[in-house]
Amino acid sequence: MGEFKHLCAARFKEGVVVDDIIRELTKLAVELDAVKFFGWGENMLDQEALTRGFTHVFVLTFATAEDLAACLGHGKHCAFGATFMAAVDDAVVMDFPLVFVKPALPPC
Amino acid sequence: MGEFKHLCAARFKEGVVVDDIIRELTKLAVELDAVKFFGWGENMLDQEALTRGFTHVFVLTFATAEDLAACLGHGKHCAFGATFMAAVDDAVVMDFPLVFVKPALPPC
Image 1 (cartoon, rainbow over the protein chains, first blue to last red):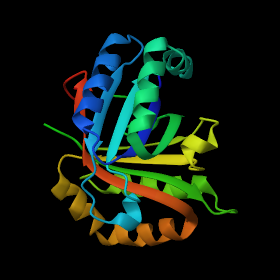
Image 2 (image 1 turned 90 degrees about the vertical axis):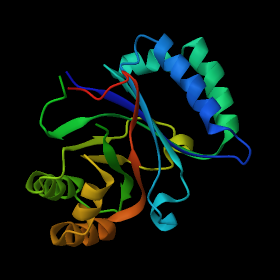
Image 3 (image 1 turned 90 degrees about the horizontal axis):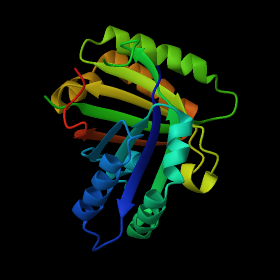
């Protein structure tokens, strides 16, 4: 079994309370059964040339691309998506099946 | 125990054989004990406005920020880093401790 990732790197507009965004995203991830994993991180790399100013990363994991597509089309996600995109100054979003190299299998 | 992530989104120059890059990165990840996890993915989201043209994601996991710093300063990484940066057309790199929300604990 693989894992299908929905990854977003973001930088927020001035005045946005990122904790509020994370709280809403947490609620959404908990509510949607198809979300197998949700985690986030705040960048600690101090090299603007590499980070391009992105400050946060959000990662959601689904069993399949179809599960992700179903979630993105879900009314709750659409409402949150609009809030999220209004809050970001810049964002990169990528969807991909994760290839496990080391270790060669997903964690149990 | 947390997890410290080193994440890179990249788009490669024309003519670069991405499989060769992945092969070299795999060798490096296997050799360096501090690398707890290495995985990668090829973007499948067909929305340039969101992906910003990035085609691949690489994720390395370390136990701590210190382990990552030690690896980045390792001669083998430095040699690979130069190869990698010469091959990319554009890249975003971020380092962050991953906050586990759902589930609330790292996998076993």
